[in-house]
Image (cartoon, rainbow, N blue to C red):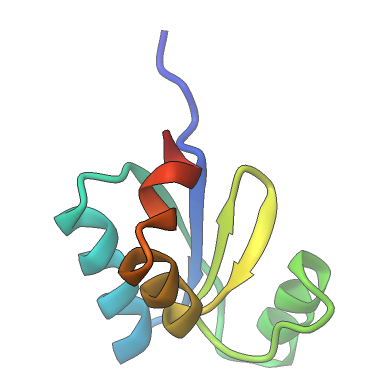
Length: 87
């Protein structure tokens, strides 16, 4: 049985921070599902549904809880809490 990854990355095309977030997860061996959203008002409205504070791409969700974007993901990684959260 294939399980849905604990991590979902909401991203958009041509987004450097989205690419960095995905590379960080891949470097740590963390499985994730990517959801591409359009860089439009509709895409931003979808981000707002994920987290009312969300304004930028990417948005990273771990076990259904938004942690923020790339900077927040990197901070979790730097403190060692990323791997704790995805185990």
